[in-house]
Image (cartoon, rainbow, N blue to C red):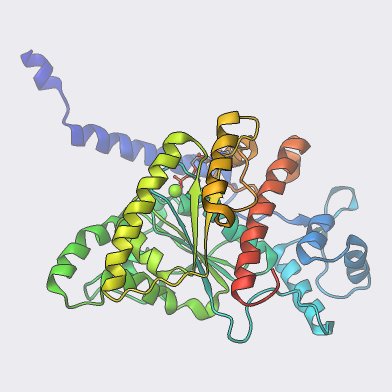
Length: 397
Ligand SMILES: Nc1ncnc2c1ncn2[C@@H]1O[C@H](COP(=O)(O)OP(=O)(O)O)[C@@H](O)[C@H]1O
Ligand SMILES: [Mg+2]
């Protein structure tokens, strides 16, 4: 017994050592995943993909490129033309110059306001980060100016964009830096980073975000600072001019950061996997959120949404109980459930294994059927959300 106690390492030692070993190992894995500089880069797009993204025919795109107008694509194997996203955006601008009616650069104009999407739910694993990452990247690929914000201390959205949260993100380099209560607070514009995807910026996250949950009760007691529920909105407002859409990936709890996100949002996306325990958990989330937000509203917090939508995630149409659950939600919430569900797909989870979204991985990496089915579902979900954003701007969806 004695020897056992003597040889027993302390808990903090064991998990601290394990954490450090894991961090070092993950870092070296990144070097093999993203050679040569262990940095992520966005792939180039085939002429078919580029034409589809721009919204013109492949033949017209060829005519522009062969006519020597606009950016010249690289030629890949077999003479395939390959366009970078920068070139696709340049083509959009070029087309807009000559166009009378139709606009190819889709971003907001006039008095259309920056749209803030909060992706929320209590439940870890309900697909918040997957939804937020694919939505942000989808919108950037369409040519919108997008800011993705990681509010989860677990920082999966940050990791998906090529960062290792405990290594690449230093103190005061997350949203916490812009909402903290002391005099080390700094402008969000100093915290925003460009990503390897043109038009997509990110506010990364890491464990530091937890500080906000600890400091807010203290600040509440002192009643001197701007209240917690307005601080995320204020920080986002300081950079909103630079973006068409802001996407907030929330932590799996109804803490002060999530409440701040709910107050900053113009659209709510509540992700739900259509299974009994998940739906029951969401019920708790809705009841508690409604309670807490009621109190926030009484204290002067503004909650003015253009839309609220339930996003069905990881859906398996061949699973009868899931199909029944989706039908049940549709009968209760009607148009508030997105028409298109996000299907469960190994293409999505496999992409996640190499810290990528499906938009980053080419079709050649999967069986065509698997890839097409997943990308169709993604485009349908994201296209529907894009339609809601355009409606909020008063345009046709
Ligand atoms: N449509 C999908 N098909 C397959 N796997 C998915 C899908 N959406 C999410 N996943 C996987 O489920 C897990 C949890 O998703 P995630 O987006 O991280 O949830 P949350 O952010 O709500 O915790 C991840 O491993 C992710 O790769
Ligand atoms: Mg997450």
